[in-house]
Image (cartoon, rainbow, N blue to C red; front, top):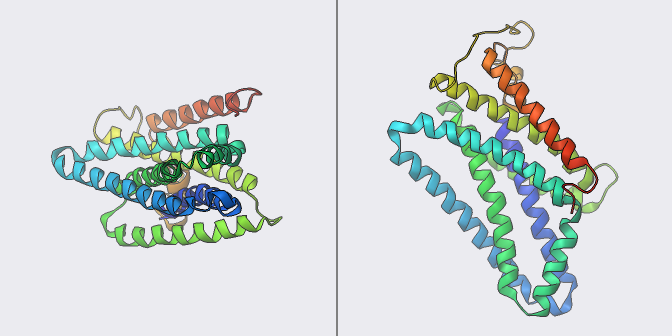
Length: 274
């Protein structure tokens, strides 16, 4: 459930950030005041597009009953890739997001292109909403069926938490700001992607797409069981396993080696920065 809360929280905050920037600019620019109606129309359109994606994924699962395990494995891995892509995108564009959006809005306002404002909002909401759909599906696919109702409550809790977080960040307090928020959640997202990747690797081993090489490479259950309440949360958010196979350990280590290389490259001057 921790994964669901975090996913909904992070994705909702990003969507609120974009909408907040657009709304603030339109509200503070007299000649662009008419664009606010188009902004909210774009928000509704983005939500509809995300809902259609959710319906499409659900329909695809229903049509592929004989391939359900394979489909769920694919979605878990896609969710992990999308999380990494989102982190890299925010590292490249996060610092200039506000400026870029306002410049785009200025051009659209000068041309009275309110359809462009609606499209901008729709794409932002659809992007975050579609990512949330894929992430949540990947997480729910790995969860026991009896936990699904609680997962729904966790998603609602994540949305409420996002609204509270956005309000605090808008206050511009010294305790928490956007820079700190994105830095902390970037690390958390990479761990979450690792957890989903490990789940996908284990599913591939269960499907015999990957060999385990060595089962139960070690047993740290005595220290922290990944089946317990605390250990389960740690496992869901980091990919920790008390009795991993050698293949799982190698894939986990390979994931972090690739992430270290990619993040180091993005941190170099002139690379990955707008």
